[in-house]
Length: 361
Ligand code: GN1
Ligand code: MG
Image (cartoon, rainbow, N blue to C red; front, side, top):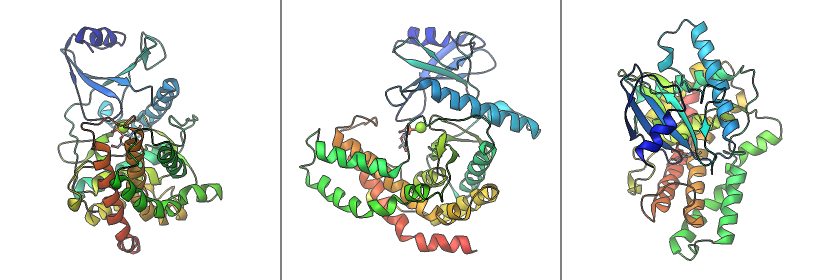
């Protein structure tokens, strides 16, 4: 994309000041993100929304607008200051009501860049505790959202669907990768756990598990921290939608409790850090206690295993399909990610008894 094209897009939004520079930002696997530097009071984040994945951009931005407005009102009522650094603010396009602009091909949005904030790919027990508190509070703030939010990706964290997609990929073998011995070996390791991992959908069907508004992508790098390691703001709200609380609890630990990145090929370095689990769970339970049911609470250790498992299945499915979903940097990337997440699943599963120990104390 040319800089002049990006500049033209930015000007559909009421940014203040003169644009000085537009440069790529972050490491997301789905959207394209740029930082827009200006000589005005704020810089901005320009994003091209991946509408092959988020097919209903209107619903997507509706969810985000409702949720951010609701959180903003709550922060104001609580007497918070510096609110523009604590909740995202999207600009309306062309002076209208929509917070995105499209030329019919691309879908774009602009939010205010949050200053003096840090992201981490790894955390320590202190910021894991802060993150737990922040996500519990985030869900608590949205628990009484008056608007109805839709599922931006229907059944996004539905393990039964992810399992079905894997089976379909295996049967179709579009990229001819089923002949690889390693693919067969991974499949054999994944399948025996499938039924057990689909427990959430069964509990939901039995009316025992509610859906709530969740973030659904609580990776560590979707959180902004201040210089002291406290959470400033939760970002990347694309997957904000009704889901099980397991999503937010499990996906955070999937990235935070693993000492290495999700695509690190050194599988022997993968582990599930119990110090991170303990501090995150403590923070989360402190602020989520007000709304969590017993069933939700007693299944949080299951959630800690479910998310590495689901992510392994998703990366693996994409590998078998010929890498059509996640951005990859080299041909085996999705296979490396799968191995890593499978190792994490095993490490977490082995520690489930210890996780229950944390509950009892
Ligand atoms: C995707 O784009 P990013 O990195 O925030 C994915 C998540 C996965 C994650 C794995 C919409 O998130 O569900 O957990 O990659 N988002 C979507 O890194 O599929
Ligand atoms: Mg994301």
